[in-house]
Amino acid sequence: AQKITQTQPGMFVQEKEAVTLDCTYDTSDPSYGLFWYKQPSSGEMIFLIYQGSYDQQNATEGRYSLNFQKARKSANLVISASQLGDSAMYFCAMREGRFGGGNKLTFGTGTQLKVEL
Amino acid sequence: DTAVSQTPKYLVTQMGNDKSIKCEQNLGHDTMYWYKQDSKKFLKIMFSYNNKELIINETVPNRFSPKSPDKAHLNLHINSLELGDSAVYFCASSQGLVAGGNSPLHFGNGTRLTVT
Image (tube, each protein chain N blue to C red):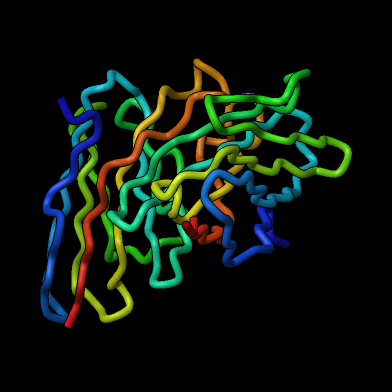
């Protein structure tokens, strides 16, 4: 079974609009962390935002926020006021276990976001 | 002042050759990783080292051999390269087990390996 599922292979959004990228996860571990990364066409992996399973509030980092719905096992990334530079591949990832199961991140298949004028 | 640097950026070689990719981090992290990104952009962990000790080996062919001379370096040697090894290989680091689960991975810029 997939541990991280990203069901949107591609998304389009108009500049200055908000966009939500979906992520659902599967774990039986009560302690886990969820991460979002951005990969622009230049190829580097950029960390955006983190949400811990015990965090009471949704994480926010500038224009990025995480809509964390624990009961539904979803951790959707919301990008507000989209900019052309937001066009990239976005990956959701999960680390399981208090000590991270070796600290590895398991990644989803990604969502390619294109911001249009 | 690059945090995680890997070399080379591009590697083109023929089947059967042996090649190495080097990785260094100056973040003071104690855990380092190798990930493989295939042509469909799927990222999969290969290896992880914590303080020079191998802690993850994800059923990677034994043609792939990681080496960590110290906690700031993790190199990847690949023997007898095959066409299917063509991919982008990412090195990454994080603050490891002691710090708990919220330490993000910091990635290098990747090495694009093409086997012809």
